[in-house]
Image (cartoon, rainbow, N blue to C red):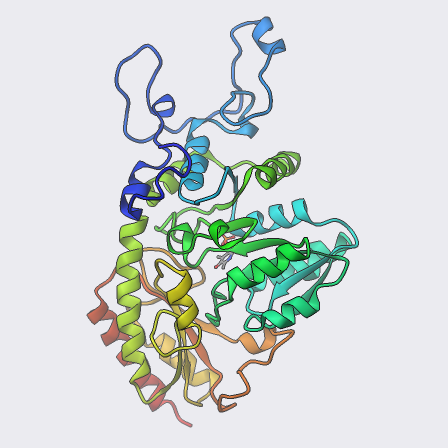
Length: 410
Ligand SMILES: *Cc1c(COP(=O)(O)O)cnc(C)c1O
């Protein structure tokens, strides 16, 4: 399947076909091919003779040169991800999602530039702004993710780039991406979206006006909590710049990990369907429990952002949060400790369910948390990453957690 011709096919068909070129799965001169690209472990690529070495081909995709420019296993994964992102001309792979965000921002930004970031952004992105980017002379300003006018007002002549997360992976606040991307374009501001939550299957970032779409492949694409990687997909112009900057930074991913990502990708649509359905069932159940003040899940009808979710997304995932009605941090810890089917750990998108405490208040820069219209006592949150277990069992487990919360001495 060549890049993007699968837009009329369904997502299950697209993840099955993506990146499977005969030139990467067969051997020249021998009929037939294997299904998945083999793992090409390589640093050195051999040239047949001196003339071939001296005439080595241009720095383009699919040319053997040296291991740092990859081999067919990495090329097949990048090609598959490009094929799944309508409007993309290419994809750069990075050793983690955070490395992908860094690789993109270090391509787009120059000393003296201003980066705008949505206030729902993930903490390591914020830490990058306060650390690496500040050290390199880039200033970051945060804005209310719910307010496109605040974004427009924040743009100044030095603004070069905006980093969006949709939804924010802790508070699940959605952003009106088409509107923000349009405002960015009018002001020559490069728009970058961390699209890890929905993936390219659930949200077609470039089609909604985004210049560069980033994913942590560690989450849905890998799907098995056993490998880390990130990606950035873009149209031809930005793809070329991202690729050269990544080469300049010495970025390369292991072919073994690329093969794990390709394996995960084949079941991604199926897993997302299952975890989305389970997450909705759990979110609905939680919303009816007296211990729960807020369920933060844009897929749930009646929640903030649901209208945007219905308008812009073609799929969801198993990640959402909820906030207890009052209580204490210790009661929340007791609730999480009482869960036996949910692991306690960071990350998400694996086949196993996870629970993590969230405290967004300490992270906000432009907007308060909890939101002004909530009871200020409602602030102890839990983020759930729903895996492939049966939803009824997970609901039973959450019931035990809520009981532990209720029994915690006030
Ligand atoms: C996990 C995550 C990342 C970072 O990915 P790693 O592969 O863990 O480095 C980036 N963005 C979001 C929204 C994430 O949840």
